[in-house]
Image (cartoon, rainbow, N blue to C red; front, side):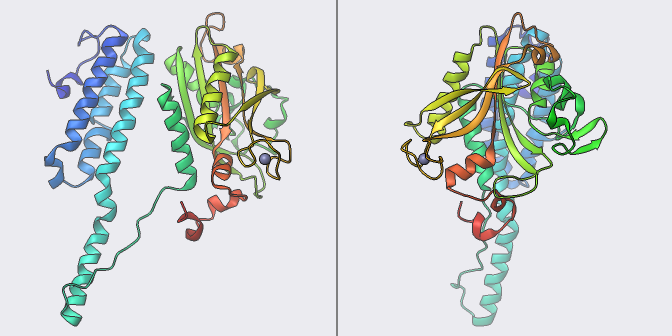
Length: 370
Ligand SMILES: [Zn+2]
């Protein structure tokens, strides 16, 4: 049976009943994706054809996999199917973007050609070069987000997404943030109406993912967040956060420390050391702040680390049992850890940028340095 026939059937109909078989099935689809993206017949089609075939909202290969394999999967296969689906989607997106590149330069090529033709008419010299136009590149915040994502994808985490316009329930209540907590005051939060906010953090996706996929769960949640902050060199009312969440049996604080220590060394360099300090967040217990040895002075003390040798880079902790319960997960059986970090801050450290506003001003002189 071909892949295109298989995606019309459910896992049960395909007699795929265990996690290893789900993984093998998705591996088959990924191999098919590799072959399909190489198929010469797409060369003669508009570049979006391949993208639509794999990723369109309706009737694409991914849409059918979602409908027939993921949504209808039995409860015990949901986590593995979800994880495999995210991986497949990411690969399909990467392949489709590669395929789309000709679209980005296509109209310009046409202009170059007409430029050559005009030149030819004017001076009769066909060897004159055409008009070359600059291509865009990724924004520095995007670079850093993808770099962080890659480290966690390598550890087996899946990328999760959620709405930026969020209910008060998911943004606060489900995360054990009581009505009396100062961040619920409208100085910090942008309310759409009494029950709806622009999410102040990416954490609501934790509970949404727990509800949808259950445990075990290993996810990374990148996205935009909104707060009523006045713009200055370190604050912006809109910013990017990345949140990590691991839920499984026997998860301890040691797993959290080990993972974040590994991440810090991958991102900031092998010599980086980490240090954990007690802190407080309503949605984790115990909670901590993670500091890294200063990447500018190596811990000797400098202006950036305020001569302390350490820089705080994220908040973290063990997921509060109340939050697990809101996600429909039994805290007697499962435990988990979570962390959250600001992507702009990481980009500022990585590239030595001292004003967060530069990221949002769309000044080409700044952006073309990356
Ligand atoms: Zn320093």
